[in-house]
Image 1 (cartoon, helix red, strand yellow):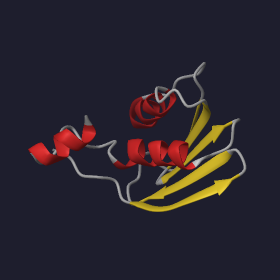
Image 2 (cartoon, one colour):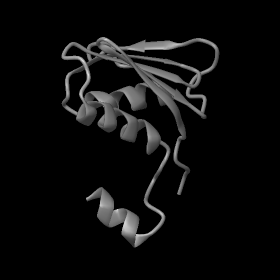
Image 3 (cartoon, helix red, strand yellow):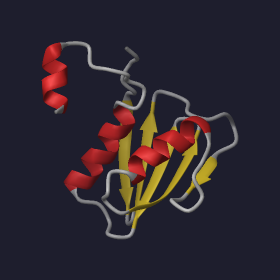
Image 4 (cartoon, one colour):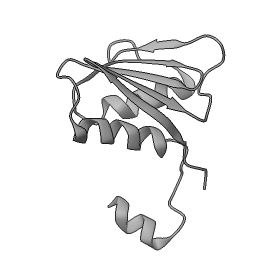
Length: 105
């Protein structure tokens, strides 16, 4: 149930990763979220999932269809892919098929 969020572009700028999506997560007001200042609603839940990855995410800013993520270690392929996957599958409640379930385990 739910649909994948389409990732239109991922841009790395030093310690910051910018993710452009096809879905709006906020209104015209963005939300800044840190582990010490958890956000509310949809942006807060998305940020919580990104913090829970355990890859050193320090800051998340969500503005409409843009997700900005900062970590002090910079970005490698694995960390970048994990953040993109959390964002891509954020609106999914469960997989479409048994094959999808086995891929997520």
